[in-house]
Image 1: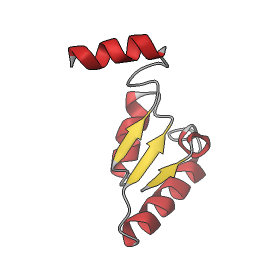
Image 2: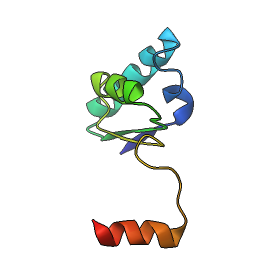
Image 3: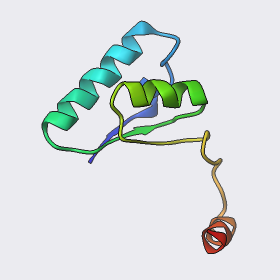
Length: 79
């Protein structure tokens, strides 16, 4: 598994170089048979770009903001 730091993800849709870097990292990771996880997906637009660039998974505020342990455990119990 390889995680792409949010530093590279935050520029997606804004800086052309960000997409080139994320794509290159994703291609290299897949060549090594690794799963690619992008950190810092904060908008639906970023998530769409990450999917287009070959990221397998993403995490970030788009899914949920940080939570205290008790609140997180309660969410898990409801699922």
